[in-house]
Length: 114
Length: 111
Image (cartoon, rainbow over all chains, first blue to last red; front, top):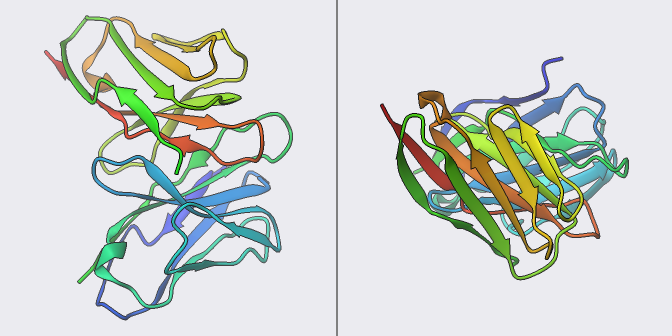
């Protein structure tokens, strides 16, 4: 199993540009989530999904969109990038409602918005 | 939003020493997770805790779910250079699937 994969690993955008961060998992996990990590802070939840076709907002959803058309994939879209979105983005997945809540993380995407 | 506190913020220890760190919350959690993050990598799960008072080991690592359910502790015995990194705790309430993460404890091991 590859686990959780993320692409790209690095990205530089200009203010106002849009892009999609890709996330995929091959563990048949129902739950997937996106976090951002900023220096000196813990991981903050952006959006999450408890299954295909179901998404919801986390703690810091503004400026980001998500969709979940399949169990495996959970892309994160930045519609109009802003310098405040410069961060490291992590995708994570876990089982849902099976008593096991361990989340497994991808390697991250390092995004710089100029 | 909900905050978790981790202490210490950073620590420098000699190789071979034991390490203790903790995570505290103002509210009760039903699950605690401990992660380690190496530079440029994603967090790696170390230990999961599901019951108050539970003590779980993973090699040289031991973590405990506090009796009050508002804290958790991680100990590393006989530290080695590869223990260097940032250690994060994460807590989950008894409702929902989402976790809240602490700001991390940065560990440096001196040879």
